Length: 264
Image (cartoon, rainbow, N blue to C red; front, side, top):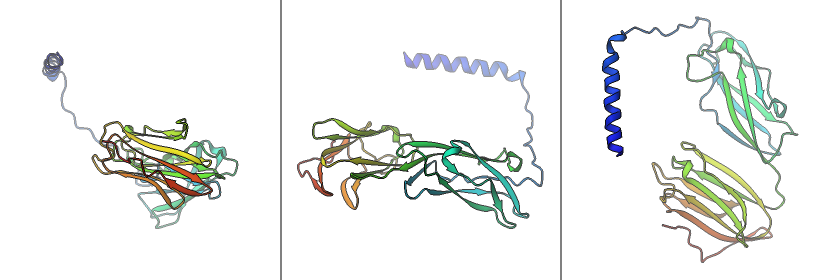
C-alpha cells in the first residue's frame, strides 16, 4: 500500500512540475553587495554551545572575529537573555591589524548553581554582515557546578553521532532512581554530568536504543569516575546497555565483580 501511495505522489508531482514550466522564466539573482567599510563582525562558529564552569571558577570566554582589520574599532556588546547572571563587557575592542578577539566573560556569584542557564549575547548589527553563515549573536547553555560535600561522580559521554538513542540512570540499593539523563541531541558531540550522592551501593546503567552501543558512525565512550577512580567505561558497541554496581564508603570505591558491563 505504501508503494502505491508513493507512485501516485510521484505522478502528481511530475504533472505539477511539467504543467507549470511555462509559467516561470529563469532569472539571474545577484547577491547583495555590502559596503566596503563593513567589518563583518560576528561570533566564531566554533564557540561552544554549552559551557560548564565550577562555583569557584566562574570565568569563561567566547571568540569574536571580523573580515577587515585595517582600522581599530569598538563594537557594542550586550547580553539579551539572563544578563543579571553574567558579567559582560560593554564593547569588543579590535585593535588595528587584529581580526580575532577573545572576550572574557564570567558568571556572577549569585547565579543559580546546579541548573542550566541560557545565555544570549548580541553584537551591534551596524558592524555585521547578515549574509554570512556566522552571526552577530551567540547562544549557549551555562552550567555552574555546585560544591559537593558528598561523593561527586562525573559522567562524561562522547557520542557516536546519535545522541537521541542514549539514556542512562543511577539507582540505589533499593532500585530507586537517584539520577537519570537523556535522550540527547543527534549531532551533539559530548555531554558532562555531575552526580552528588551520599555513601551507599549504586547501579549505573547506560542504554542505547538501537542496541549497538556508541558505535555508528563513529565509536563513542561513556565514562563514570569518582575523582581519579574509574567506575565504568563503555566504549563502542556495548549492545543495548552497559551496567555496573558499586559501593562508595568514606571516599573508597568497591566495584561489584559479578556485574556484566555489556548486554548484547
